[in-house]
Image 1: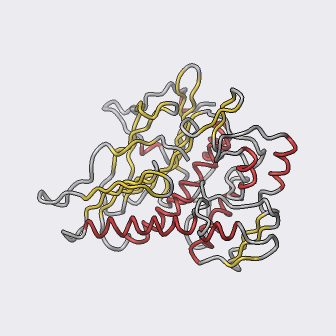
Image 2 (image 1 turned 90 degrees about the vertical axis):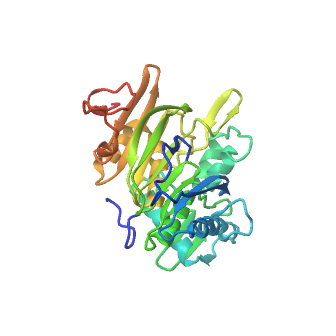
Length: 355
């Protein structure tokens, strides 16, 4: 992969549930499936343990891992570690825990690699657009002020010293573009050596444990997630994240805009379709899906094609139908019919290119 995240590889719901349950290890066992609320979204955990009778305890362990990450990263909870960091006085270098330091370091690397199409330091821009509230149209001056309170000059993440410094009072870090991926990353670490067969769906981002069987994932229409327009195979040990704006948007003065902000311009990203990214690193899948959506179907596809190992699927919603583009790494995952064609019901040009 193009990224070297220290010693490992370094938004929204357009992937529907898996088309089949986890296969039982034998005819007498069935997976334990739990559904709950976590990180502000729906969490589904399906577990089949190697040792019979431990499925429930493993599902509780997975849920506990996710809630632990939420307690660190939630910006809705004033007592979380990230919230306390975001409230620290400007100019003070705040020491972060080992996990938070790693997650922020990875986020910083992806931000730099994508030219800040993904950037966790967009808090001031979120406030300017009131994305978390009823929405508003900020003035040009307000956008420029929010841009000045975003990025590395406003929030300095120093992984070598394990510190974060806010240089401006309005600046703050948002985990919305990498938080779910960080949670699934910790889940992956907790079960990777124990032979647990598990599937976790955290708000539409899926992860399969290395011991699981491959899964068929249904791809939804970018503007209507109830409508399936294709499918692909997700391999064990992989995660898939999808970004788009059709479900999370606000309307102000008759104008509709989504929740994803372009840190480079300070504007909201238009609802052009969706992009899905598959990676063995859930945090990478989460952050890259955001970055590629911000880039848009043209720039994003060019960037993804130029990388080594980025598996991405772009769906562009046009007046003439859905146009699709996928990278070379994504090609083998696409489901195929008996004649060798993909079963993606897209109006694509030669080679699956939208350009």
